[in-house]
Image (cartoon, rainbow, N blue to C red; front, top):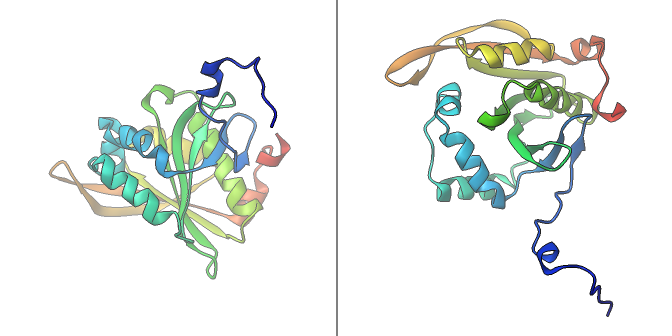
Length: 200
């Protein structure tokens, strides 16, 4: 047995470093774990996120159970978005994956304190590189409220094409909302003139 008497007790109590499943220049992805339920619950409870997602917050227990239930779902890959220093700043996912059709939907939610700094675009670019660089996907889709200007800007910066509008597709706060529908195809990603995540 080896002892390291030189390490202070508070260092033993420090949070263990997250193992990154995917890394880009400015962000990394760590697989979502049930212990992340409190973070996710807090972000979903933010009024702006709740409005943009068109959902209301679930209980912490329900969030934890959902993460645990979906951890074995082969059609869904969920990650925490981390800064290089390990700070968690958001959530990102590839959902409704169909490997036979080569399709998936992207989801992104940022901690309110980290919006407006380019992290959303960096995270979405990294997820797109994962989807097309490591998985046999051909088409990625995304939906957001037509009035969600920040999300619309992030999707456009990442090369997504506005396909159209799903009219009155979401009920939120007593009103029907239109959803903007975006997609990105593999050949369009291949034509993008930007570094890939693995070039970081």
